[in-house]
Figure 1 (cartoon, one colour):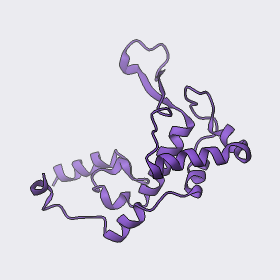
Figure 2: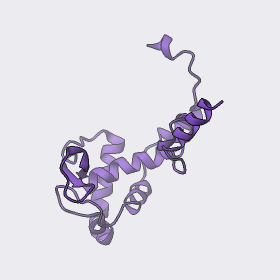
Figure 3: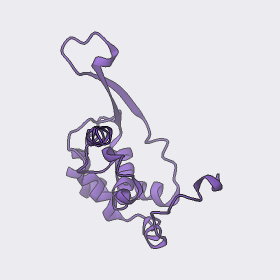
Figure 4: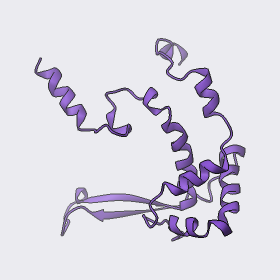
Length: 155
């Protein structure tokens, strides 16, 4: 596979990679929790992010220890990765499967771990994603690709 990637320019320097590989810190876990919708889509445990924020003085140490164990010490995450899949109608009186939007309802603990990783990657994401893949970068819209394509087609 190396020969396939040999002509692709590296976008992450060694120094940036070193920062990405630093152990995660307590503050990063707290920032991830703070960035969640307070009552948005609770998972199978039925605890919303609001619970963890409101009772952080009681549960915070346990949450941080568990999340950092997963992030820094390869502690298993399987017990947190329990997800309910729910379909929400997009229109009144849906009649087709395409009239529904699937939503994954994960536990808040799982969301904290993934959001902590995502927050760290967000600092370098723009370097890694091509301008044509605009949906992955804040401030860019997937519909921009249509405009770019139309612009090239009309030349």
